[in-house]
Image 1 (cartoon, rainbow, N blue to C red):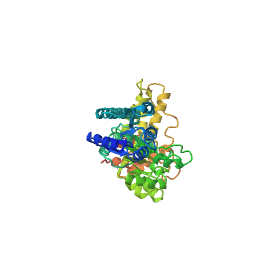
Image 2: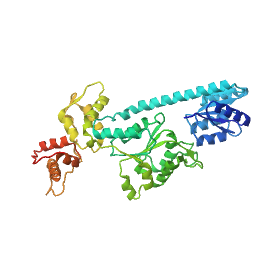
Image 3: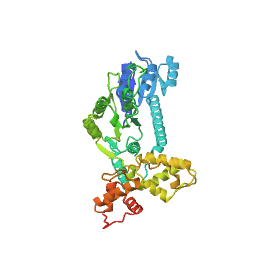
Image 4: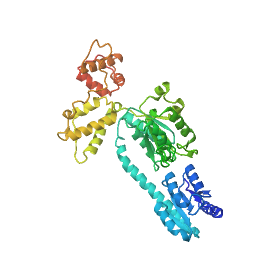
Length: 454
């Protein structure tokens, strides 16, 4: 990607000379005749460096520093000054300018200053990326597994990540949709740029438009200064719109425009700004149902659903439970070696996990904290564990109320009968692994006739 430089100076001759020399060096260069025009240009496009005169009509170079940093915080600025205003230039450096040049200056002096500024910018970006990666390590703690559904999921992530295609991630609450979105980002060419996550359900409806698109000073009560929205913060990076189903219809129309035209219009602004980012949306709601209810735009759904990725529920990947538990042991008790009893592990693999990985994580943390020894057993399970197990407790045509175990046994027998006592098909129907079905058959003394398997 080429380096973009904006030159702001009211001296037309100097502007053209600087533009010519910088282009000869391979930079992409635009010019502005004063501070106001420079600020307008910064609002339209992203730049790596601003080369600005201090004394200009209207908005001075000093004033331009503060305003440009509000628009593009990572912009590097080099000021051009006469000998009489060196003190002002020093003050400008304190305000955020990288360096200053005094007129007249040699070409080599200019190029060295630019190279230093760009090198500093690169280091800052690398440090920011490192901080993101360090902060994000915990976000990757669940990206482990050996089950086929999990491996299939990662294979799809690897295939999708290098592209810029819009992705719609679906799955139950607690399955790790945001973690998958982060994996897509960090495996993509945009990995060195920002990953911005927005929970559409967590932001008050009256503020979400400002949060997403930004606003200009005075656009509404409380807007005391210009603010960049999440779309602009994610420029050149990735934006995750979590719980996209909670976005209001009016904002859905604006989001559709962003996806189609790649421009945003901050609240209260009369101008648009170009953006370049990847959009990932996530939801635990059936968007097609929302469409039928008139609560979600069908055209937006098809724009988001270019690459659909479904994150499997934990009950679909019970083979991963042991390795997930091991990860949690390392996190919650890193200095002690904790083990888990086979009976407890089997009980955890039998459970339906309505809260998915998040529920498993919370349970393991609780057991680790309250454990009696470094070997966890069934006795370490909380008394309320499994009370809300998602297995149906009142099957139809049961002929009356059944206990939990009676109901579970009947469901298993009904499933086996339905599929001619083919255990593989019955297990798939019940959405449990085949070995768990066999365990439960033995547990309840279900003696089978003409057992078959795929």
